[in-house]
Image (cartoon, rainbow, N blue to C red; front, side, top):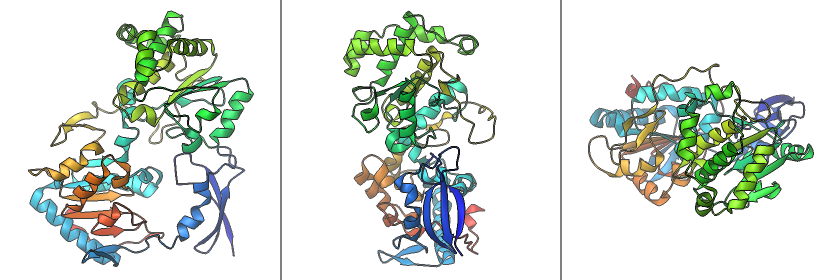
Length: 447
């Protein structure tokens, strides 16, 4: 008999509610849940396609072991025995840091991977932990750590009450508001304009979101910090400043004003490619708004000055008296323990990469140095790689070089449901099982 179940879509962090109809193990249909107060029936094409994804004949359902250059099916015990022998041998001969781990984005939306990874990382004991985060949001998390003492304290717009939304380097019409769980962003933006509010998008490209905006400012890539600094200066000179108690908590605000004072409209215009008058008009628009909010996403983090830009977005929200205010940029409930205690010490640059000396952040090394850590010989050289729900060959810079480096490793294990550009290079591929499966082999390397 068919059964109807409600679930949360695991594809992205928008967290839309789904109504899933099943018959035994087979998924018959999937649709948005109109009764959910959060997503109100919204679901994107990816969510609707979950039945096809689950039943895809190309989806891996058994472990694969590479023999004579070809992947062949194997049992879980066979696969785990190979991993136990090969991975254990590399750690014994070359040390824990000879094994690197790369964590892909889907792990953030999977309870098993999200909670189990910490156990795995501690068992491996390697400093060479990489993730898609370093080509995504880590600069934002560093800025939040420096500003708020908490890498997950990320303020996002109160879109249902703001009257002016300034959006930099974000395209939520496509992404559903990454780091800002916001199903049906199109409907919410229409509602914003319907109550007299406005959307201003700053982006080098006329994105799908920019086409819906009341104003689109095309900025030169990587220069957002100049624009933000000029806006803070203009607002300060116009008398817009945080009120108590926000002003009391914003220690160092005067020092920030002094540091930013040399950034004139003319200088900002020269760097950003946005006319000085357009910047002045934007500042006036922000000053006049009753409930403004500023939001930035990967366009503000995937650049040379990503941490500074992320910091200045929050500083601009403070200048507007909009941080932690209804209608402004507010802090959602923490995804972990609430309230989450600030970390003891700064989780940044506690150690550095072996070859180029890149700093660690939040226990991770930047993916930009993954290839060189595999290529350059010497103590601590990466000789084995474990990828978890990630495809670094596609999602990281200089993919050809990275593919060659991975292909030259002594051993590669991938956990994924498809053969892709990265998993094709693996010696062992473990699928994400559709049912809980346990191997009987006890991995000695984890002892």
